[in-house]
Image (cartoon, rainbow, N blue to C red; front, side, top):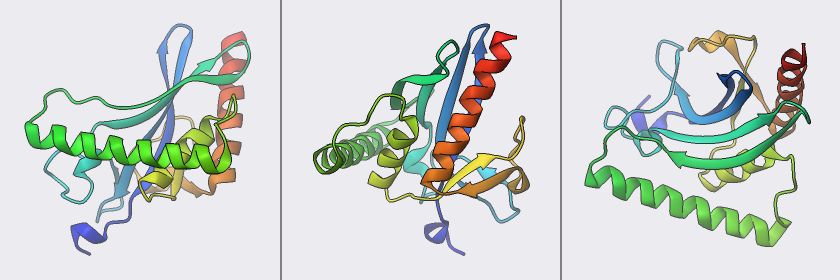
Length: 169
């Protein structure tokens, strides 16, 4: 399989940021030849390098059990002109896709982080979603499972409720 044949997926996880804050994170990823899940890095995987340091995030409201503050962004530590041009290209593609989706389907309703993730990744041509099978996913291909868009919604709903329940206790 060549680098251009590597199928890209969306890896969705959650993390505890501070005492009262949890974040849901979706990143573009792929499975390497050894079965490990990877997120792209600049220059290492030519096909996916345009998605290096790209994240789609939302924060969990622990009282309401909802996700708020949706955003998508690149978070590089250092950047070259070629990387900056690549980032702009990806962000423009996302903007066009979001604008088209808003026109065709209306705006994203409140508490629909899954729809936000689906619309962004669809704009990038990625429709394969993976979520952790346990509480502490590693990069092993055995610790994630494939889900549909509806499965992504279900996983997020259960994960957000689980986070809110744990915070309440």
